[in-house]
Length: 180
Image (cartoon, rainbow, N blue to C red; front, side, top):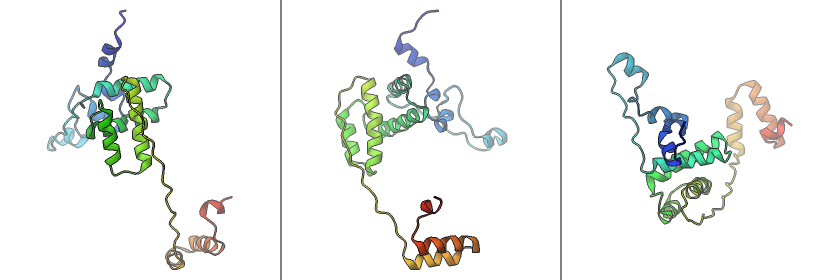
């Protein structure tokens, strides 16, 4: 058995093996993707298979590297989703372009941190130099209902929940504290 070079081994890996489950069917390039109804009825139009992305080989290489480093399946799926999102909106080989996209995108700082984490894996795997920006998470102010809205909720529920909600409202307990 001959050993393949790492670049050739990456080409032999099908993208559907490394993408999250919703994308696995769309990434199957052996046959066009069809819905169950279109196979049965032949009346519905077939869905287009997903086109390969610009840096699909580099993204797959990054996902293989993350798996080899012992990252969990959910983490690898999160990296895959984040890199696809970045790939659609920015040039992955240009770190300054990615930073500009992150600075201007209208998402919360937690999402920006997740995108930075995924792109950091991409840069580390593909030997791209970049300095990871830091984002502080903003704590959201909790929604505290007024007494009037609490009374409306209590009057709209059945007897069982009305009793529970009344006790919670009168004592000021949260639902989590009631169970303890």
